[in-house]
Length: 483
Image (cartoon, rainbow, N blue to C red; front, side, top):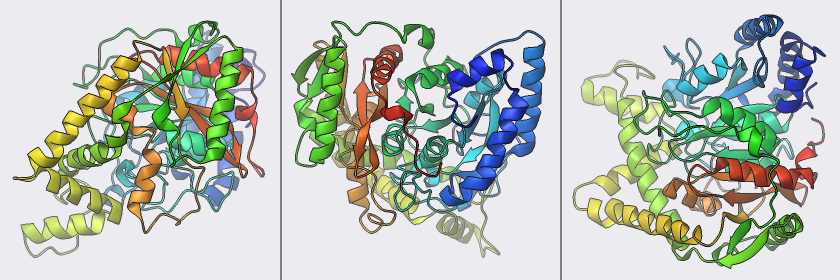
């Protein structure tokens, strides 16, 4: 049963081949057996899962249906879940139990999804390797000595190892798409504002977006259907009708214009990955797509702009963690200043402290114009590049990452080297565009992803292209040895 996709689970439950409770017990046993190798979960919610599974079975017995009704999933541990620890991968929130459900959690629960647990992540979603978690590094099931990517690495590793069919993630600079690429999954970052951020603990508010990680585009469509929609509790949520994503999966790609930016194929890209990306282009050409070279001239400025804007917003968002209201509090503070300093110094890890300091500096008097304001101007130029490109093409295609997964610890002493792994993904966040990564092959036994970008609210188009590609390739069906 653990090899079933979400779509197959939906059909199996509808045909009464098994119950949600039976499936849930199988996957919980599999998590207990295999997750110690991976460290992909922070919390396992066995009692909640069995309660939700039994309730889903009753709903089906009473005539209800739905693709998510009784389907087991997990949530990245920055989505608030009522009465369950929501840690953000940090010592700061190790003892925090959310008093409410995030909108994404509530929507998926209402659709009948079964929550198996909360997945490990880079602390406060800051990282590209899932090494900065207070609970230890997550390991890549394709090679346990390598990283699974971050910050949604726990969700990615759990789905890739067939511990469950799908999980939620969040993407601030590629944190769904990059781990999807490094673990042979399909991962979708929706348009900014498409999925509610209410109850999703913030890293960088103008960049964060929740989305699904699954093995197929079809499963991502099912998950996104349950997650998307306007939320009046979220001021950044956009009131835009949600289409039926599954209905558009089987559209023809004949005449689809795909743009391939020349800037993507620079010296920083592993030539073996470049070859796999070109193979993907040829496969889509066979399906009727028309390929065109395009240019995104301001892409070279994306990383410096992102690593000013994101830390600046993080320094503001994380100021609430002060040892006073909730979260970690230092022992025996001498006074209020000591309480603030030691609670934050002891509660936050090194990467989070680094980004808070960078952000506070960029926003400080005398430097705001030189750094933050300039970065926002570059952000606009990057968005303009995309708007010009989408006048010529329907989809933009390229690599998701410049390299396959690296060994755990290989970039720990050089944060900038890890930041450079986001070079192809962060532009979508800066512009607010939807992006998808799908499996495209292997290099030295490690997965490689191809990234698709589309105009605003064109998630259906991304899913359509990925689904048609997956009907004609088998990369996404490969399973890591031992799982």
